Length: 154
Image (cartoon, rainbow, N blue to C red; front, side, top):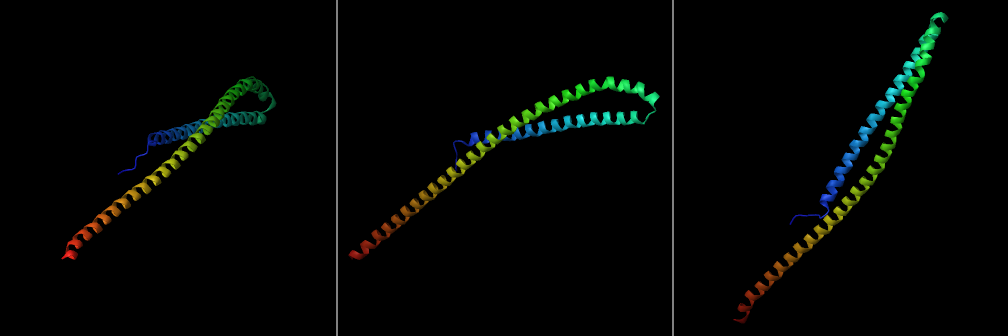
């Protein structure tokens, strides 16, 4: 007889959910890394442009500096939007992490229950097999006794 556990489907669904949450967490982390790279790249452009402006002569620098200073607030707002997106992703990652930990805990609990149920099943099967062997031995002993009795009466 095979071991069948009533909660196996729940365990399977929980394990699949855990895998889906892990994939979601990985995707969120990947998107966060991409946003961080965008922020770093934009700030590097700022530093590079400032460095180039600093190396130019005063007459050239004044006009370009005004253009840079008028462009900078727009760029900082863009960085602010990226940072806001990053913050939102961090919150979602935190929520997903908490959900993943709960799901993992449920899966581990179900696996423990399954192991306990399997162990009880194996003990019961062993007990039934032993009972069957005992019955066979009793019947064999009784048959030998019955067969030996007629010879004893002669």
